[in-house]
Picture 1 (cartoon, helix red, strand yellow):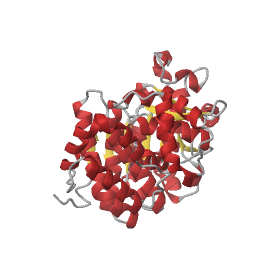
Picture 2: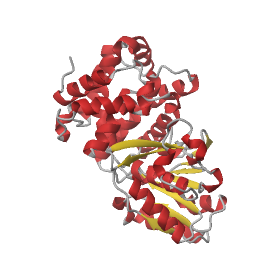
Picture 3: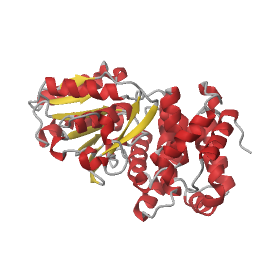
Picture 4: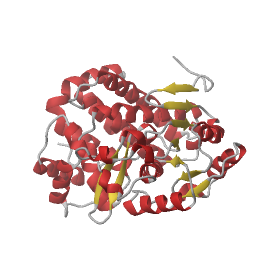
Length: 392
């Protein structure tokens, strides 16, 4: 079924309220006002801060009678210091809500700032370990309106943020249910100016979320179904979004696939992320690109456990060779089509920290969702294959 751009618009409530469609960024101010904000803090990254989309968002708030501030001191892989600086600005200027605006870095930092707005202590006190989340004062979490500008992380519908502990070179997941934005304003037009290589890397990130959720051993049939459709959307629309960034149908469908991926990974993630998180912390590399490179190596390692379900998935998304080999070939062909490197060496990542990467991978929370419980040594082996480009 072919949908028009007018049909690709609507209001959803799964898992939160989503206002989706081209041109809907003009509703940002109204969304903030609906949540009772009078003085929101718009949190974004430095690359977006000077663009018209930010001034337009501030103008939308002004039109709604709101006084909107902007904070953009955020690294591509946000660190705890970025969160602390944002919280200081939030408190000093008397803000009462957060607009999380941007790609994964902007959204994650913004949600962490909203969490910490009314908390004491350090952001890492609320790492997703044990019952740390229960120590949060829920009334201290600021309301959030999320506005994604990439189609990859799906952080706009997530209850967590990935923040780097710079002192220890470790990415940590900060979690609380109230970190879920209350309203998402998803306007595919905001992604039109995204360069092709970033569109490709973020799109592959969306694929990794859906794919790892689909392969997870945990039981969550709704998430599994969402993941399957998310993968199909990536197959159908990512190449077009990369080749023709002005195609609003492709941009819309990829934004939907991204949101679906983050919804689906309630079921769990796996080895791609368990390796990508330490590599991002150690080498400050792009998360989506890391997942894109690692994808086939992790699939091959998990083959004994996932072969049957990958065959079923291959049939659903319409591959001619509906089995594991056919799916792997599709992944490799897609990466080549999108100019994704075949190995980590292309990112100047070598084998000198191989043992450390393996040890960090088994400690990452996402490792628990891998179809096979890998040891540190086995993660190191997968990492080394990805460094060398060894797909055997």
